[in-house]
Length: 574
Image (cartoon, rainbow, N blue to C red; front, side):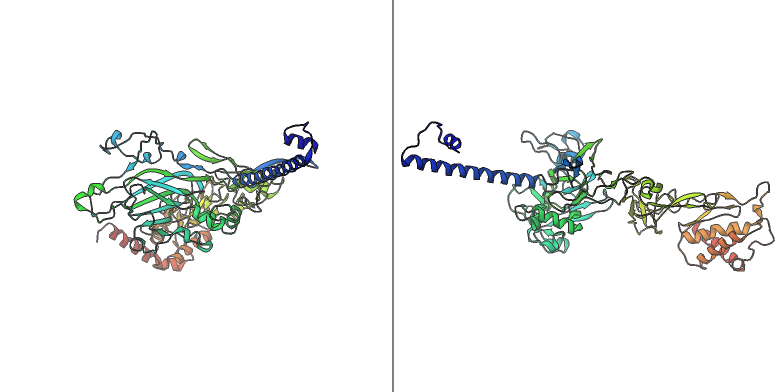
């Protein structure tokens, strides 16, 4: 204590005389205590702030236990970063000022100028053509792609030159641009443009935090050229749960766990700007000066992080794509599945709770010989398989994630295969969104077309016909699931000419089925054909074209007549 006081007084040999020295010593002690208290408070404040800022940035740490050192795992996520660096747009620093020509690369305003690095104060911008074709609408779409699922962490800033649009929509996609949903509407009159009331994001509450709103804040003319920026307000939505200064992030993370839609709301793979009406300068369209109406964007800032499902703290840019550096025995672009051999339990995303470290939900190693360990060659969509003796095959049982097939390699009806993900991805089968104009079947691909009996479905062989994407109806001389086996006994000659009427009737049934008609109860006819094929014992018997099937004998002439009439109509003979 004496040493501490002597250091505080600045002299180790100062004499302690009179009351003044005593007062001085007490004053010094008080100041030292204050300094210590202030230092402790400062340390605590810094520690709390750093902890709040660095929350969920560590996936694991080495800890000492009675059994020795071991890894302790935590929920983790990458740091937020500016994502325009990864939009794969080449830099073009050319400044186009007075003279512009879209046909000349040196005088153009290409889209790349929205994401270039502007140096020395020079502003480069993308620009559309002018509104020379008024009153036809002047509209444009700008699509931003990352080929990776991202999560917004701050406001989106879009900087316009020469006026902000009068009407526009910001949209997002969660499936790499296959489908779109609105993020926010912008208009100078929301009721007139979108039949929606005008609302401010700051007026939302916990019950409607994910509501898509229309705002007039960024579209009305304010008479100032400095008003260039249009925002999609993320922080204001975060503030509903974390407070105006975002100090209560625990409240936000807790709500994200209880409201799945909240976290998904800020997730996207693509963004799209739909520019519907250019800036008018606070007046009506001046027909004698249409050259001044156009869109121009100089900068787009998107602050976000890679979505790694709380299984990675790093996200790297490899071969033109963002990729999570997965931990917790997970794998995939978004750490969306367990590694092979670590599927003892179903994959789950990490959890923010309990704070501050969350729950990693680590994938566990499967025990040798278990169904999870063998995985049954089901592409990760089932842990159960069964041996079918008479077919001599092993097939998966209870395929999940809308898959089907022997190895869960195909998609169920009304789903199509997403070739942009791995076969074991749980999102490999996407629900069909067929264009109802022209698509007449319940199974289609990503482009809206119907591919009946294609390579991913039943590929009927030897003239067989696919019925309802479920089975092959074979010609008389063949049998099997895919009509791949001959009915002829080895060493004997088949007489396929003995059943000409049956061969003619098969394509007629197929024709009627493909046009989705109920004429003459086509399903009953097809079932009769199938029963006849299975029960038929002597294929060389030409005395009975339809043995034991009087129903088919009665309808055969009707079917042939309908087919003939259809041929005449389709060839415009009548």
